[in-house]
Amino acid sequence: MENLVYPWRNANWPQLKMTYNYQINGTLSGIMVAEDSAYSYSKDGGMKKPELVEKPFEYFTEVKVDSKGNRSVQSVWVDSTKSDLIEKIVLDFDNARMYHIDGET
Image (tube, rainbow, N blue to C red; front, side, top):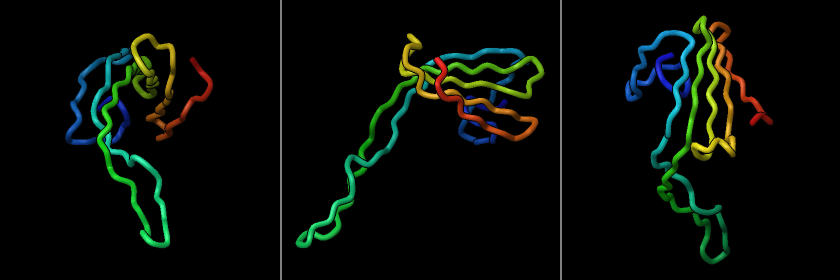
């Protein structure tokens, strides 16, 4: 596994050198660019596009890789208390599959 999020390579992401059957956890933080409203239209003003704004984010993540090194699970929470799970993703490298798990805590 070459990065923490997806199995495809990106030159800007750090390389991990670890053995199988490991677990990594920590805080992911950064800034995302998002639209601040919806598109609108008026007869006089025409089409109005939403403005782009920068929104900071911070999540807590945990990545587990199995002992054979061919599957991993990534969980993302709102913070380190792990009380509010945002998403859980399972990656199966042998079969090139990615699964989103719903309803787990």
